[in-house]
Length: 214
Image (tube, rainbow, N blue to C red; front, side, top):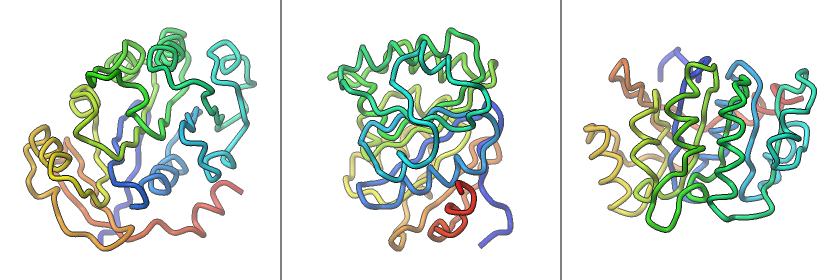
């Protein structure tokens, strides 16, 4: 293990990939706890841990923008799973120019049936960096999410995956076969794209999470 700990910095992007139950949501929350700035958590799967992280807010851009700026974390649970409606809120937040970073618990909900990302998600990934809008996106199906999610990311957190096509997509995009590795439950790899460096980590410390969100 290394002394360096993963961190998503100002304006940076990370993907957290792993099958259901692999630990990816907890890992994403740990990354959020160490990330600077103000965050909106989009709790698309109604996860109780995510619900507890911050101020509850309607998934509506004007209402999110109206929350006082001393709220470090806001948590929104969408009431619809129409990808166009979900994406429109992202587009409005991105175009607002405000430095609100985004954590999406499941990126699949922001893709249409053909696997295409909407203009809001694409705008956040391609233009949000210059506005200081950081991004953490989770998915249990790497094969089904847009290439933009990969090409615009600085880091990949990789938990256990099952389906061969998920590994194939991840390796084809990154060109790094070493990302595929047999990992113990809740263990994960952290790939830094710019440094071309893969490091391995054990389970995220629950006590550390509780302290950071106390």
